[in-house]
Image 1 (cartoon, rainbow, N blue to C red):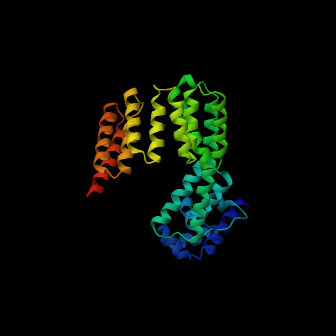
Image 2 (image 1 turned 90 degrees about the vertical axis):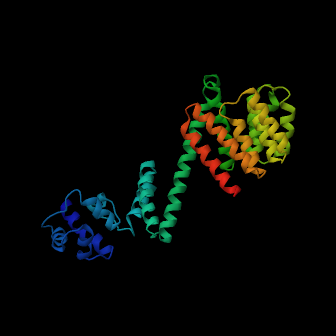
Length: 307
């Protein structure tokens, strides 16, 4: 029974795609009689031919053995239906690879573009859900175990809240915490970041000026204060704050990156490029070759923009 379904499907899917036996044979570099014998059940395609045949018919290999499947316009659309069902990252990557082939060949139909957008949206939902799960898990950890990673995770979590339209919730959360206890520099850091992401820079600036008096040795707050000033167009004050952070000692050339951003915003591409080359030198000396190469690439882009 299963073999009869398989044999019938070979012909059904070929006809659904509007292909002749000759066209299938030419694609598979076989003779027409071989394809004919498959559809008559005299012989069967070997296991290595099945994936190629399935892709040609816009189905999966499993579909060849099913009694109620339809042929899709192309193999990518079939994989999209699989991913829609499983929501598996592996199935997403398989589908994406097939759509990239179609895109490179200039064969994306409107339906393909819709499917491509849809599967990215599904993956976005999956990523957001899992990102939030891990951020929430981090909040249950002891901050003293790895303060740098913990606080960077908190910063990313705040940004994610704004990305998914819940920025006011996280901003009000940290305002409430800060109002009840302003003695923790990390609480101030998180509140300032939330103000920045909300584009409430005047309030952020006032909060920074009031809070920094209590935490004059916290380099992270000076970096954020510089970012606030940069957003307000107070570039000289921003650079002074970045330099103060550098004097205290940052973790990953933070003050140099921030100054480079300032110079680029001011149109001082030569100074920005020089800053990125300095960053690259420092990072390479610490063994961060990939990051150093990225900094060099940015410096090269900025130099090209000068001319």
